[in-house]
Length: 232
Image 1 (cartoon, rainbow, N blue to C red):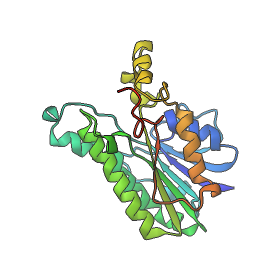
Image 2: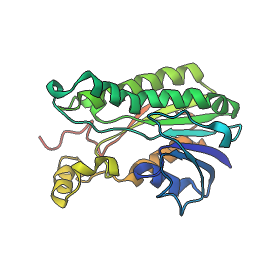
Image 3: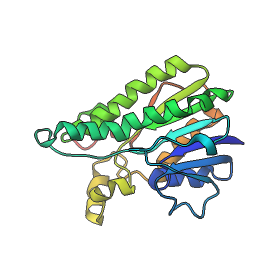
């Protein structure tokens, strides 16, 4: 079975992905807490992406897949954002990704072929008010992924998923009432808010050999929000 590492996979999309992969892979999850993982078949590694260096001693010599899940949703007017807010979003979304990838690069390149999946946002391409900080951080991921994919092809594939608003703990303050969920759904061409399973299924596909001719791509898994104008 393939060896797959999830960074920050204890909640939301990460937990949904872990549920899907637990019986078909050797699954490793590096996260701050294992509280929500107790019922799953995996190896947990204590890890905080904002301050720790990943301990690779529990990992196998080969990694066939890496998924980086930590992120932020920091929506505020630009005039109220200090440079420190941009630095914080870059650290959790992008710099953390770079550090982890450099740490496990020997394991990724030791496998016959490996796949890396990271996460952007619909805001990186659409131009949405109050999204300057998160859009900048997610845009860095998209540019990095394409350059990395070019440098390490065909040994390591890297792709990015760019969701719209998804019902995860990270987005709770935007979806913490039925009224908010209904309004968010109405803004989406598919008239629904994304679920962790929607994103996990695409992630699993990009880790799978069925996607072995796909690299350097950004996939909008967003209900059509980034390309369809149906509410105007």
